[in-house]
Figure 1 (cartoon, protein in one colour):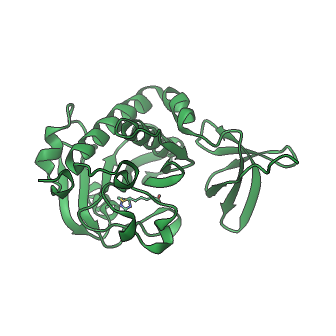
Figure 2: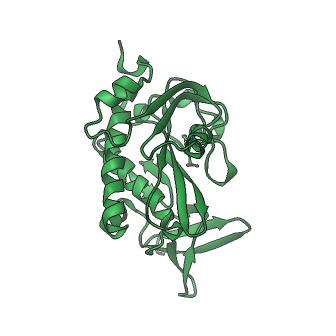
Figure 3: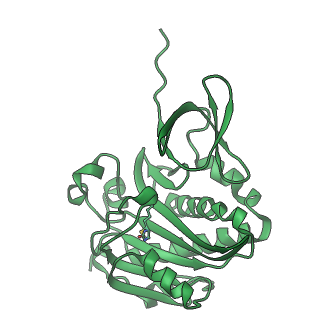
Length: 272
Ligand code: BTN
């Protein structure tokens, strides 16, 4: 059977996960509106940290900033992980950064080109989006009740099946490598990577992961445009601060913190 034609199975995924704190309970659904919505319901019902929800297809896959996430059946990975961190709500943004490190490190093992992190939550290969992260938190005052960490990875989808609107900007493991991937095996690798990085975050804070995050952040020192709700800022990307905010230095030399927005790399104009 070609590796890409295997259906998702909780047993097969669990067989590949060594430690099993994440993934003791795994739902593999045929079709769901959004794995984040399903996982939020499970968390509200008291599900334990580490419970995972996978789906073959999402009918209302959610992206960041109210966008939709292209979620055709049987080709990619769409999953949500329930987390109940002990750190405070002020550190919730670290979960997205932690997940980006875990995804980049895991995907690097199966790719010949190193992945890049595009702040805050995109994983790119050769400048095209391969995976995205959508973190949704439920807090009570300064305490986090739970976090739903939603991850979408374009695995075996060929370019011609992608909607025209994202065909130029997105890619998949299949498109990058020319081969199909066993999604159960890849899911197990991702779960292990997430568990390892989450333990580091919970134990020592984001400082434990910051250097690795920076290694994948290719825009440092480069001119960028950041599109916020009703505002566009230009400047040089300097990195992130301890809260995970993007630091840019604008044309006047003023340093600014960006908490949310879309980053667009600008090409350096050739010197005359
Ligand atoms: C983004 O880059 O905009 C974030 C995309 C996150 C997509 C994943 S797929 C699994 C989970 N369920 C959703 O509805 N969205 C996330």
